[in-house]
Each structure stands twice: as C-alpha cells, then as structure tokens.
Length: 241
Image (cartoon, rainbow, N blue to C red; front, side, top):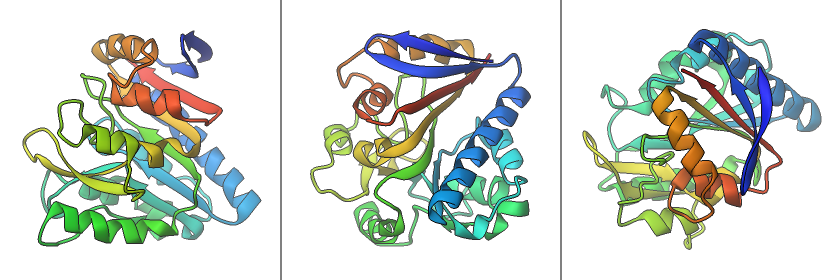
C-alpha cells in the first residue's frame, strides 16, 4: 500500500509492504512505468540505481519488464574503486541482476575505470556521464544505518564536496568505509536533479533512521540533504520489515 507521509520539512509517498517480494514487485512496476512514460515523451530514458543486497530482487524483476531498453541509459549512484571481478563491485551486481533478460540491451555506464587513481577514474567517468540528460528520469537510492546514501559519508573528508559539488562534475572520488575505502560517487546535486526520486530500504532499524532523516533540515544526514534539496515532486520510499 502507499500513503502520503509528511515529516516536517519533508513530504513523500510511502509504500509499505509485509515482504520483500511484494516491495520488489511494486518497485519494478513503478520504475518501469516511469521509464515507459519517458520513452513515450522523449524517445529515451535514464535510470540511476544503487548496489548492495537490498535491490537484487528488484533488479531481477525489472530486467524482465518489456520496454525498449535500447533507449534506456542505466548507471550507478556509486561504486567502490575495484574491478568488476571483485565481489565488492556494484557493477558486477547490476550486470548480473539488471542488465539481463529484456534489459540486456540497455546502455549501462559503470563508474569504475582502470586508472592510476580514483580521481582519474572520476574524471573519465564524468565525461561518459555527460550523455545523461540534465534531469534523470528515475533515481533509486539506498540508505545506510547512519543515514548516508550513495558513497556520501558524513565522516568523509570529501563530505561537503560531495554535497555541494563545486567542480560541477557529475561524480567525484571520495573515501568511504571498509572493506574498500576508495569510492566513486555521483554528487548530491546530480542525484537530486531527477523526475522521480526513490528510496528503497528494508528493516526496522532503517525505518527508525528514516524518521530521523525525514525530520532534519540540516546536512546531518546525506540522504536527508538529497531529499530536502531536490525540487523533484515525485518522491517515494519503498519499505518492508
């Protein structure tokens, strides 16, 4: 079911489900519907997704949706600075789960490149990401137990750079948490500039954190900053215990 939830200063539609399968199915239907709308309106569509364990069921279901995936650009919200062969690679997760079945023909832009440093990788990827439209059609984010999203971490020395993005590059190199501290992340300004902004989370602990995130106006929580500063009028949270 979906309800409108207002936790000052934030407003979004909350979709609650008893089980992860139901949440994954609803999210896949939601995202595919938005992509079809973009394809009908402009002839192309764009999607940003997050890695980790939570979206894997959603990826499998979305990959089976029938739409013109050849005209859909898919990329990640963030990536660890590791080769795709690493079990820590978000690119690996997306290729195995989402860029398959009907969606195998989508144009996927990974955030990892073999370069001399994470900063060099970010510069290369930023050039590739310029193919994205100024406003992304759908951004699907996760949330950590500390309220971070993508690889925008409060304790990182790159925190303010990732929030404000003075360089105007779509992504940047940052330091994150173990087991791989070097990361590439889309900046908060790039993530928030979208038509539909979705947060996909599971578990009671993250439900409690969401309440804190949604009721805080400051930049204390990266996810809260993205949600609060986005002018997107289609904000959604998909959650199950």
